[in-house]
Image 1: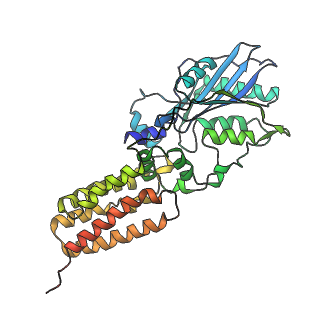
Image 2: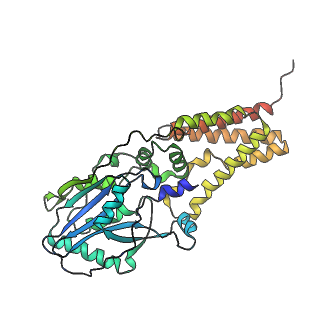
Image 3: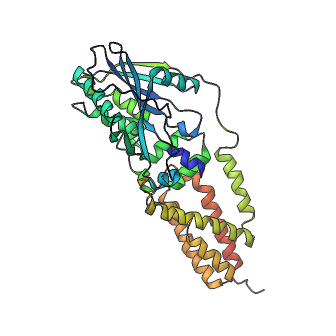
Length: 376
């Protein structure tokens, strides 16, 4: 399950140095920039990062504010994470430290200097100063609804006469499709996320929740009839080191792996193992949404694929209850057909086909074994 936790941790950990200037007036040389950082090689950095830079040479200020920091030493850390009430907080670093960290990780940094009035700049700076010195520094993280990108977007929107434009290509897609695209080179992590996430991620995107989306939205936005972006520049360009495709972490290795259960689908011991493991996973999918406050895992239709009723079928197999087995096979098959029809037009269909096929063959083998043989 480690990759599932990492998938949520699209955050940037910087030093815990806090720069507190109070609500001092910024000079007329002050600039506020949106920093958009590209994907990294590690899963936690796949989605990139968003931060705000306050640069005021007249006051000797050059600080980066990050809304994506969490503390691993938090009591019951994993329990809070799964439940969805883990507190994230704002941290700060110098721009030099920020830049060094991303250059070291070979992650691209793009800076958009925002075309703001002096009062708007002061309002943002005052808000950030207040946030750092109060309980507002902490917030409950939500993967789509509240993260380092949405928090920055909300802050910028609070000083604009018109909100940041959402007329970008991603708002024509579902959340699941958007996330799927980021994990093309991380198949098993992508598989895990698509199994974990429920129906909310199939909704059409209506907000800028990822760094590149906010970058695109800001580029299209206006402030008092002028472009919101005064200047856009690449602070650091990622150095391409060739293909980063894995030899094993891909769809083809998954297909080969799934040949094993297909080959052994007629063996009773394997049937019991597969049904038990899939059933337990199905119970997890069905119940985690009742406990967790992460709306993404609620109403998970993957329970039709990894069906809790598989445990009943396994029990009936142990009892050699032929009549019960056949009834349960019919029910589980109908669930599988319904599941396949439901995801037929969704981005994850091809990914799920090996699992669908394995279940179908398993049902056939069990049915055949418990059907009377025709007399000669």
